[in-house]
Image (cartoon, rainbow, N blue to C red):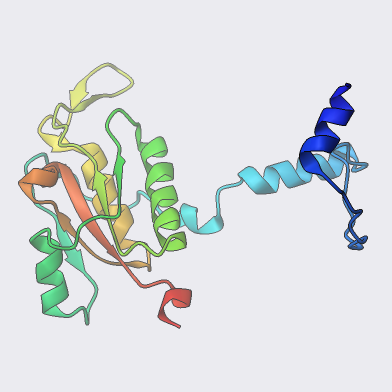
Length: 190
């Protein structure tokens, strides 16, 4: 008995399916190199809005400073629930060990993913730092300030989908993290 016979015995009577009319493409595409490069560039490009997360005009914060922000019109009970940690984050992003540019990309990505999944609240752990940074001469600058935290505070204010954010409760990172409340996705409210 061959493998084909074994298979036929297991499966039984087989009937051919009607053609669906669906076109299937092979993995070997006939697209030229220029169009492939163009599609690859478009797929990996940073969305134009990501550039909106600018650095100009931000203020350096201390490592223990609490931060809070809310758009006008947000009801007080929702804001109170956010600040008290009652709105539990659906996702957490940890920025420890990232430089400014990588942090900016990760914050933007996290906000986009949260919107895509209709998450209303996320937690961004930016850390407290406060150890400062070295300039090109090797001098230690801004000791006691939290560089990533300062940027996150500045970036979140620039995103229209962010309704509010505030420093987290101690159990979630305290002044080293922020709860972020996002607008409802348009599809979710319909």
